[in-house]
Image (cartoon, rainbow, N blue to C red; front, side, top):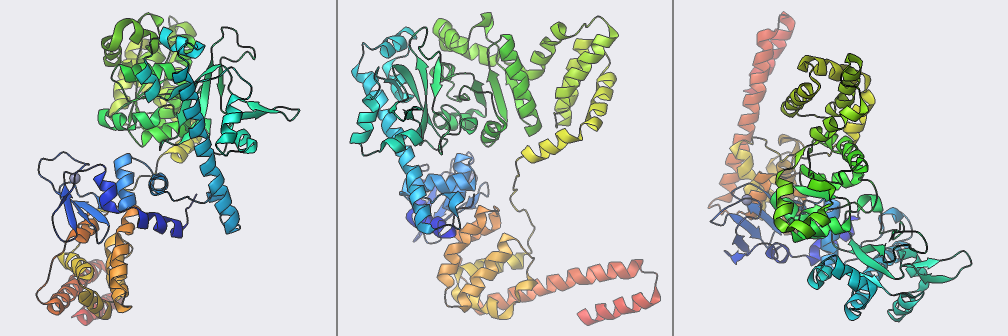
Length: 593
Ligand SMILES: [Zn+2]
């Protein structure tokens, strides 16, 4: 799923970091090429967040975060590099060629990329069409239905709820006037081709919920029947799988919920669209839902990027309980904290909001219980807890979930709870657990394959000389050239962003391209954050005597290396029992002088 370097550079060139950061943070000019503002990544009262226009980079002196425009989007929106590139591309109007066409004909690739963009636009045009139809037909069945459910116009507008006319071709005719072909309509799933080749509207006389992907592009629809007994027997009709609509990866209302999920530090996962809307109206804008299917590991991984805390608001019937158990199996191996919102009286969240308002919903969220309560709650009907055999089976059943818990402290409290409930000893549960774990290597492999790779910022302790060389190499092309001439690339600690940056700036200076080289350095932080590098990129330290500063730092760096090497040799010498080896080590140590 790589995006070509040229495309990435094109997007970078069109997304000025001051504009992009400036749409999240109020920035004030603070120097020839720098701006300052309150850091969006930590709480502060005085600005320590710096943005440098010349180097297109940012650094916070408070929390150490820093990087280029892509890293900023990754951190700010909790998305992957891949998604950050896509978000900025759509902001800048750059079309990203289809990834799976790499290596093929470039013209082909461009066409396919264009085709995907047209699918988004067609979906967005369709959403507009359905919303307008609903607005202009306040007496339609759809409008009456929404009123019955107590959903006001502004809420329908915010969630882009619309209505499909009771017609075979109203949308088809509209899409043609917008310049879309029937073929495109069929590919987007808004038109349907029957077996005899006739093309007609996919959604007819239905309430239509628009579905957007994570970054807010229109991708499809979920349409609810307005007839008590729909002709085709389907209560909901969704967009079929298309190049832009992959049901198992999408979550309803995610673009509306992202900010709140981050702010509250939790996400509420419900069953359906109307439940999501009820939570949002009750002030819990952190609610999302899968699209009429079971919750998938892909969706879990999307949510994990935003938060580790998930509250399930599923029905309390037995199907809902099963859904909770299945979600636990997916979420516990991802080390996510899992709670369950139980709604009194067997209602769903939508009914609860209608009858009790925001307060009742907030109460239910406050009363959320641990997932283990739901698991133990099902034991009595599954097993005969009055007999030792039944208890053993129940312990094995609970153990099947407990073994997915990674965190030792959490696990211990769960084991205590389960032991209490079953009236067995904690040791018995632990024994059950370790035998399950032994049997179940396969589950461990699955866990490894689903765990998110996490790149921690580099916290190497650099000798001060290295940091001085870094600042020199970035801020002065003369210094960078001198460094290139006097320092061998291998003399720096291998393969980390700081060493790479010094070497790149030096190489750039030797080729007469110092400025370009420095401008490219912030992209080193896309892969691996490095506070030392992002800080150096926003610093503009001037040195009175550049040559002297370089010579001193290079000497200090070498001295530090020699000292370290000497220490290692001395250590070997001390533990060596072989006279021949000892004299060889001694000779080496003397050579270092
Ligand atoms: Zn900060």
